[in-house]
Image (tube, rainbow, N blue to C red; front, side, top):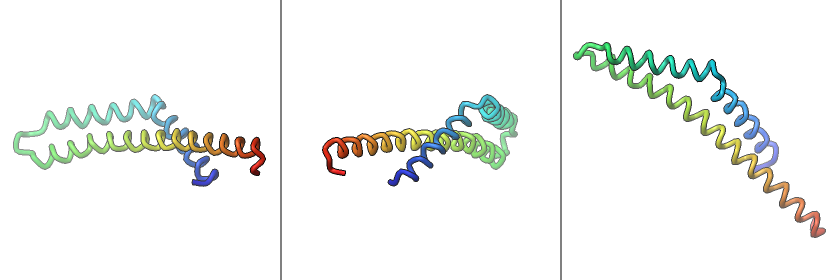
Length: 98
């Protein structure tokens, strides 16, 4: 992976981390989950489709969180790769290979 792409991944990871730590977004996720679960508990026993839709809604909120977490993780791995590339270039420079 080239340095430009690694830097893009690092930037995306930082932005995703900021979102996951943003109190408004954290609160919105929690409020949505709580509302969906509350509505699920209030469904009529015969409302299979309604419960299924609410189950999916709760899981979508979790999937969004997981996706953002994966972007953060990718950014961390990209930072490690970029650091490794820099160390490798420095070693080559010291050894006179470049």
